[in-house]
Length: 177
Image 1 (cartoon, rainbow, N blue to C red):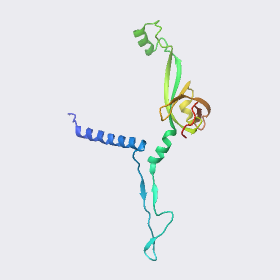
Image 2 (image 1 turned 180 degrees about the horizontal axis):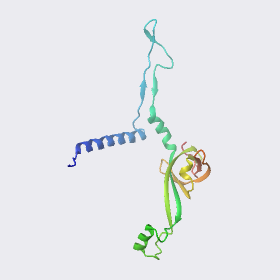
Image 3 (image 1 turned 120 degrees about the vertical axis):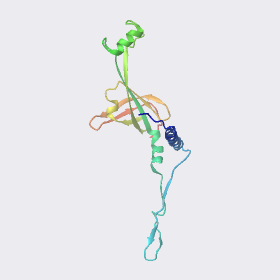
Image 4 (image 1 turned 90 degrees about the vertical axis):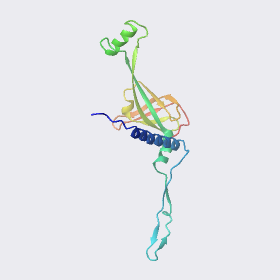
């Protein structure tokens, strides 16, 4: 059976994805905003006239987008690193390295880095960050990337494996919370 090619479907799918990403960027930059208005009209059933309600005449809901815009600066990305000794004699990585660099090359790696990723939230403007314990457990190095692109090395302040929470500290001040 011959595979059919549908270029219009692919074009339409990528167009929708592009529009969605473009609108997301505009929302993130505060160049556009989304407001949902909800009008609740109460009626006085004795006179069939609109009744006045002080709390329900017009109720504006800014929705999920506004909450995301307010919270985004306080969300950080975490990169974790576990350092280990370079591969043993029988490992495939070591065989490939020996093939290209030679057995006694000074350019062979002495340590390997196993990386992981996670996220956290800045909870204090002095650099305290709340994250999950499983993200940073048994890690040798933790780096934090802020939403503005700054990167800082983090120190583990405390953790509780039972509740899967950990508190980190970075040496930056006046951070968004």
